[in-house]
Image (tube, rainbow, N blue to C red; front, side):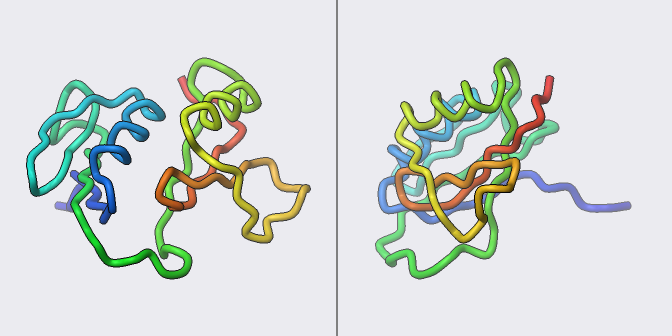
Length: 123
């Protein structure tokens, strides 16, 4: 028997704002929100195929590069159109030394957490 990833917990200065951003990016919904944080996920909720994301309040400053980041893929448009959508939601392009020859875009969410937009569209 193996374990399964059920949720990812992320420290945030503004859990509500970050949760809203990632809801828009991933098509998730808020599953629970209180003073301890905000949990978002697919409509099926906790325990489904996709893990939920939990944003918990933290006053500690982000220092340096995170040791974990998300890779996301467009689902209903090409990479360039998805990049435009993400930038309109508040993502920012980031240069981490990836160079111009890569097939993905490195971005940051509103709190500066890096994530990558890959080229291949997933259905």
